[in-house]
Length: 258
Image (cartoon, rainbow, N blue to C red):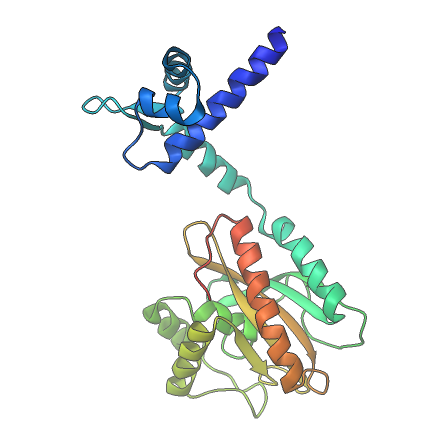
């Protein structure tokens, strides 16, 4: 019986926390009691305990209760402990199983992208990429996916420092053309590499955002151009946008990409 009462108390405390979190201005004891159908004295006791531990605080002027800063402390620790590669891996594996193509996960670092995950797929495809290797941003879909969501001043600085080397005859090397390309990427939510980095290879990538809405990484599918037809690319667009949202959500970001 004691254990049942303890579980019930915990359940009620969680219900109260949920209610309080939904009301920006907080809730009073009477309002809470009505909504979860328990007496006010019980609500008050639970609230007092939650206040004691910092999970709820009471406004001195209104007497209403709202979430305490303890949740901010806990959430920050959770966000600090999130491992991008571990969080993204299940989604990338699913994508590999669906497409049988090469899947990449990269992070942005000092004006370049760094490959932190590569899934080979079941189809034969020779690429220069490998985990730990760096790649330029201007001619890769993952690089463009990240650059499109960085401030223009940072983009221009990267292009100035790193240059826009010609990797294939399809590489965009004109700065104005490239900025227009990034505007399209930002509007669409995905980036393309149409044989701009390696001949015969076409890629599509999406940005990944952290809990602050900052772009920190990108995920991509790469395949031989003969397999990455216009029809297939259209199908992959919506799939990749969804993958980007899923991974970003695991990092604490509520996606705003349509």
